[in-house]
Length: 286
Image 1 (cartoon, rainbow, N blue to C red):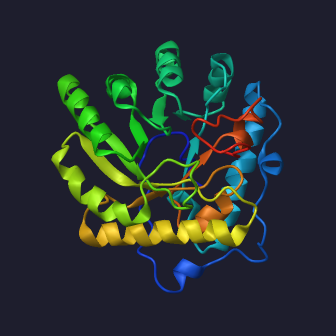
Image 2: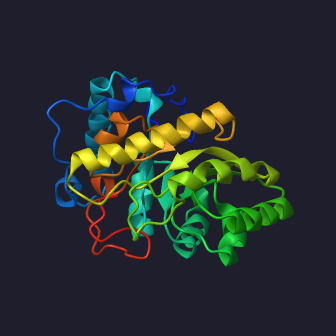
C-alpha cells in the first residue's frame, strides 16, 4: 500500500457509483466498531506510532480489498487534536507528515512550533469568519466548509496573502442536530456558488456519519455522500470528487462506501482524555 499519510498527494477519485457499487457491504458486518474498540494504546515513542500506523494501514488494506478497491486510492489523514507537540514530533519521526486539527488556535500554535518539520496541516473543524485570517496564513487544506460567508472570508484573506487553499464541503449526512454541515438538498446549489471564490480549490465532500453502532445506518450516510459526489462530478462542481469520510470507529465501512480520505485519530494516537462536544458528538471515535 502507498503510505498516503506521508505526503499530501492527491489520490484518484473513486468512479461514479453504479447501482451495484452503492450497495456494496463488507461481508458479515452488522455492527460498527465502537470508540473503545477502535482506540489504540496511547502512543508516545516512535515505535508506538509505527506499530499503531501499521495496524491502521493493515485495516485500510483489508477493507479496500474486501471492497474490490486499490488501497493506494485511500489517503490516511491522522487527526492530532489534543495531542501534545512532543508526541507529534515522535509521530513525525515515525513517518506522519500530515496532521488534522479541529480548533484553529490549537492548529495555529502547533503549526508555528513544529514549523521545522514541514507538516501538511488540515483543518477539519467548524470555522467562524473571524478565524479565516489565521487559516489563510498556515493551513494547507480546510475540510469543513459549509457557509458562503466563510468561503468569502477565506477567499478574501487568501487573496491578500497570495495563497490558495484546498477545501472540502461538509455535509450533515446523518441529520443529527449535533453535527455541522450542509443539508444534503443544499449541496448542489452551494457547490455551484463556489467558483466565484477563486482562491478556493474545491476537492470534494466531507462528512461524519451517524453516531451509532448501527452499521446499516452508517452505510446509508456514506451512500448518500457518494450520490451527492457523483451528482457534483456530473455537474462539474466538486473538483476531482474526493470523499473524506470515515474515522477510527467506522473507516472500514467508509472505504466500502467509496471514501478516498479517512480521518483517523484514536487508532493512531490513542484514546483522548475527553471528547470535544463543540465539534464532534460525545464519544466520537475520530
